[in-house]
Amino acid sequence: MTVQLELGLEVIRSYKRLSYTIWHALAEFVDNSTQSYFNNRPDLDAAFEREGRKLEVDIVYDRERGLFRISDNAMGMSLAELTYGLRVGAPPAVDDGRSKYGMGMKTAACWIGDNWSVRTKKMGEPSEHRIDVDVEAVASGENLLPYSEVADRDPNDHYTIIEISNHHKEFRGRTLSKIRDFLGSMYRSDLRDGILELGWQGEALEWDESPEQFLKAPGGEAYQKEFEFEVDGKLVLGWVGILERGSRAKAGFSILHSQRVVKGWPDSWRPEEIFGQFQGSNDLVNQRIVGEIHLDEFAVSHTKDDILWLGTEEEELQRLLKEECADYVDVAKKRRKKGDDQRGPTQVEAQTALDEMRREVTSAEFVDKLALEEVPAPQLVEATFNPLRLAAQVESPVISEHIGSAAVNLFLHDLSPNDPYVAVDAVRENDLAVIVNASHPHVNEIVGSEGFLNYLRHCMYDGVAEWQARRHSAQLDPDTIKLLKDRLLRVSGEVEAHEEM
Image (cartoon, rainbow, N blue to C red; front, side):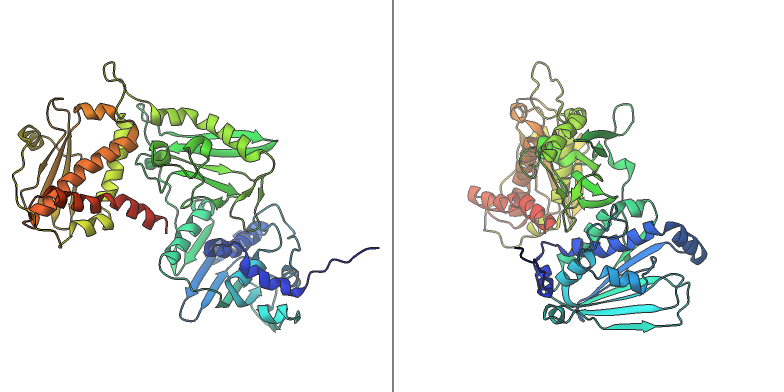
């Protein structure tokens, strides 16, 4: 006896519950467009040369009408190809590229909205074909889709236009800018190779990958190198580098499959073997180590947003990747000798902390705190610590920024270990100077860039809180300064939270 397994049309309703993000859903259509180009490259390159164009994919979101439109000038589809493409799970003719499972167009369109259409014209053919899909109608048993044909088209025309309406959610604000960031990152290989022009809301996306972003060795060469190894017979290729300017948002690895990012910036992969705790901390490694890793021979998830690790593949890959990156991690962590005492930050760690401090004091969140108008009424007191202030008069600041109408300067000086750890010149209304004594005994108790960053934060925010109180003619009561500084110490968390939205 046997029992027949049947898949009903109502399964199409379940596609809206897939674990897509909007950028990965839209990427399904870009995958199809780019794969169409790769499958027909000689013919399309010849056509593009005649037309003075390149492969173009344009995505537009009309929130007022509740409409997504994805259009391309790839090969287009014949009626037979369009019909085959509507078969759920039917593998594509070429299944070792970006179009793998015969599901993407259907699942992504149904995830976005309940109504969608495909209008397409294949190069060399005279007709345009159109089909319309009503998800609820199909789920109710109507599997005969409305079809129309427009004959007598120019045989040289070639395009596909997909429109999706009746959306399940509305997209706005930060989500729209994240779509731009993710799509630009996902198709970085095509963009930097010059084969694709990818548009989002009328803006041509770009991928900035300047070699100047990498730290330079004493000999002048950039800290960037390639690697290659195998995991269970599967080839792993890529590169690793050290960023010149520390940025947790930019660091981490991007995983590519078929030259398309499946997981990467702005949501980079941070293997724990290299970056430590889950998703990393905020130390030098998590701000500086960056790279790409190509895993073409590994399986990707249905939604193409991660690798489907089999057995111990992930653990073995992390182990081998850690070996390849070990010398670069050592460069970042290496400490300089200071007499017999090797504690305290290295030059690289100190620069990382300064970069992070600069990012905070120029952030919108910091500007909001600086413009604070409601302050408890403290009393004006004189600043002291003349040796540090005198040093600031003859040296240049390590951070000098104009924030609003105020000039904010941070000085870092090797003075006497007996001098105070910090001095503040906050008497002038629009001029703040914070002078830090880098030779203070406490500095030798600091480990790593994160510790040095926190030390700079406290020195800087002591000065800013005092300057704010003075500017508003408030009494310099200790609790007043603590209250003002408390607000400033929340800036770094607010900056990170906004960057991750």
